[in-house]
Image (cartoon, rainbow, N blue to C red; front, side):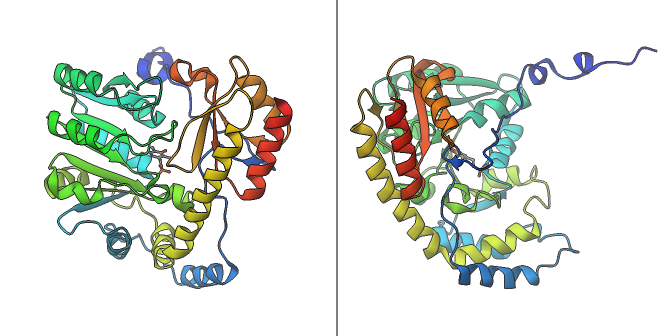
Length: 359
Ligand SMILES: *Cc1c(COP(=O)(O)O)cnc(C)c1O
């Protein structure tokens, strides 16, 4: 019998994918992945290590991560009536939602451009993906187009990143309310960048039965831990909970995140510094010739460089030891665009100097 090959067995939609590529950033100023650039004060690290010493690695973790859930509810003021599911990063929660809702004729919808994992995970699972373009001038929601797509396709699930990645803007809250009212399906408001904005839909959960709010600790300063959360009505989350793998939040993440949330003020102060640096970086980028700089409520800034220059500028920055995200190849509204994460004051200065020199 002839053995089957990957071409025979692997689903065509999986074979068509490329693996998620993370460039090597060893020794570089890393401004490509929305990480918090600050570390912890020494005494905080000592306190954390003391907690780790007692972590029972021989035991499976608490499958519900109850202590961590209680800390998260308190730290984020999650409405009492809402249920909570934790994920190994919010990426895992996106996967869980799509796994639960995929099926023949079912579609997932998101604006374009937005967070790439919505589309990728829909492709893994084989769920139809509908992309509705954002407005070209300011990356706002095109409400008329969105409502028409909802009416026509009745998507089971809509993702709205609030603020949006990679554009950095925050959609109008009133538009999101209209989407919530118009759609028969679920709407996930993805608040990955909540530490960098003053706006949230978390307190609106009791108002909308089809609203789910997703957050992550990654952009706040704990990207290495992999912890995301989904809050929403129990009747929905009880169903999603069935798909969650029992021990998806490991022991070290549980105790470390609990500890970090007790000392949340340190992370929130860092977020405030990042917001201040964002304003300075925005002004400095605007002062460079030929740049279109888009306002951001996240910890990164999207900038459109002079036409045809994105690849050259990206390479020049990389040769100078600075890694940003080159989105130009994505095309469409992101043609000629680079995305830069807000770093420390020194990192931002190094980036600006290298960019100015390359221009
Ligand atoms: C970074 C990001 C995430 C993923 O966060 P993880 O918790 O690290 O998986 C989700 N949504 C948006 C919009 C993001 O930018």
